[in-house]
Image (cartoon, rainbow, N blue to C red; front, side, top):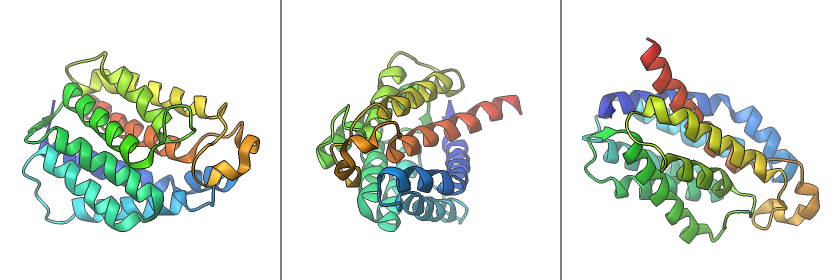
Length: 211
């Protein structure tokens, strides 16, 4: 279980690593999108890092994740800002009052975020979006309980399998839709971002144990 301070440190780690991932995300988005996904994620997570490294003291895990979502929404712009902001804000509201982050609260957070993203964007599994990675992560998270260090590796693996699956899909939404079959063979950048967020959470959680 992770208290609010540890969760804040974990999300600071995630924010820095997502900023570092900008070239990778830009490369994927230049292939099937308009090339701005990496820049948007970099801008949003830079703002999140600034917030978390300021004197901001969240009262609980839910308020921490809610504030992160609001920060992303305000700074990222575009579809990514709306979608990832919605994921964090709606997920946070579903675990209102949570003082610790464990597998069960993460699973509730991801599932509620997924539901809100469905409602906001209208994409469904198989449409080659971040939802394909998120659905896989949610399904896997529901099989686990207890400590994040034990469940996150499996959740991350599932999310990356969701990313891999997007390579075989033809995009039906967003900028990639215009490419049609030319989007085949390439992963969806939003799905890559979703998997990376979870991967960096896992990296922090497991390194904490190693330390």
